[in-house]
Amino acid sequence: MSRHSLAKALPPSATEQHREMLTRSFDIRGLRLTAIAGVLFMEGEVACYRTKKLAEATAARLLGYARVVNRLRVVPQGHRRDAELAEFVRMALRSSPDLAGESIAVSALDGKVTLGGCVCSPVARCEAEALAWAVGGVRDVENRLRVKRPSPGNGRVSAATGISPARR
Image (cartoon, rainbow, N blue to C red; front, side, top):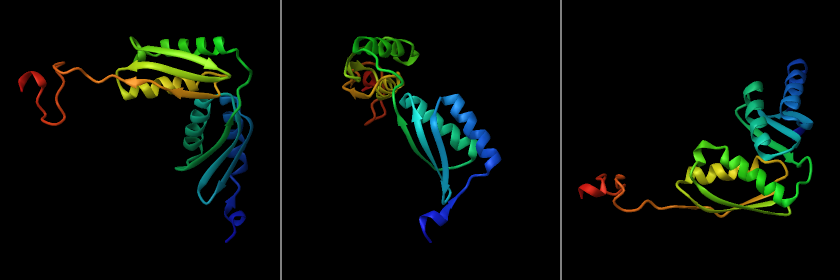
């Protein structure tokens, strides 16, 4: 069976409505949806990485596909100066309650954002990177954030013994 014979057209009425809703909600330029062997393929252009991921999750829920191949291209809407780009990333980081109190250095050069410093957890490290990607105009993110190791005697339970350091 050829690949083309496996391609099925999505139902025209539902698909057109969903396509229009996705296009408007996520500002997707040239959105194309194709189903092949039970897998939904999305193609088009979006302004940022966060929009790409949100559009994928929404399309999967709306159209009922367990597997989506996201071929949406991230094409920033406009070029931002590096200083402006770095400031927008800083603002995004400050707006996150999960990153309150974290000391994160941000720099930008030719659309590439670099994050530096220390954070308290791997989750905070990932959150900072995701927020940087979500800023329009970011072309790449270099995550140099380090996760601080907890100091001994902080009351945390040891993974090896299951006993808090104060009780050993």
